Length: 249
Image 1 (tube, rainbow, N blue to C red):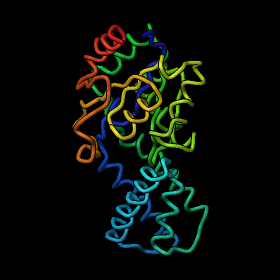
Image 2: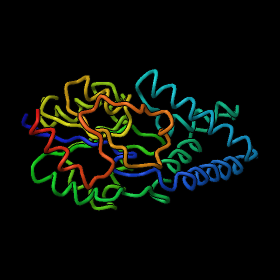
Image 3: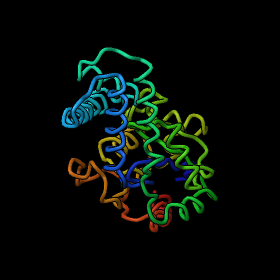
């Protein structure tokens, strides 16, 4: 098998979930400050309930409809949940703050990622295929640039831009078609079985299940078994694992 393209998930594969609580607190503070200015005076406990409900809403769309809401969609959900009078200007401003919170409190790039990307780039074309949450792909690219790894990627497929989430085949084909690569000549690296691995394998790609990030928010719900071609717990072992898959296929 001659691999041409390696596609990679963003969350809990390239980056961990570090600073998630700080990002969440910043969003709560932003929402309360902005709504206070409008005279709504929402209690902290109410917004905590709203955020919990918003994640249930997010997961419903993500799992059942294979798409992810944008930051503005989530702010609109907050507005409706709290029965607030519509204020588009305020909602847009809050959504922008929500989206940029990842730059204020960024997650951590996982160990050996940069070194591995540098080596992979010598042989393959690289792409990111990622489902997004509060922060859209345009903001995630800024984080990639900040960490000096944006330069390694040739294409991107973010769910807020494609309108679909993994395992929808469009999530993968958006990147592969731009790179003129058939699924059987590509390999995907990701952490979630039902999205990353199932989507890639159903399309005919090879897949590596990354299990090296214990900070993932989805670890409890992630399948313990895998249909991936291999499991890897460190980016230090990615190159050899890909070589083994390529040589033994």
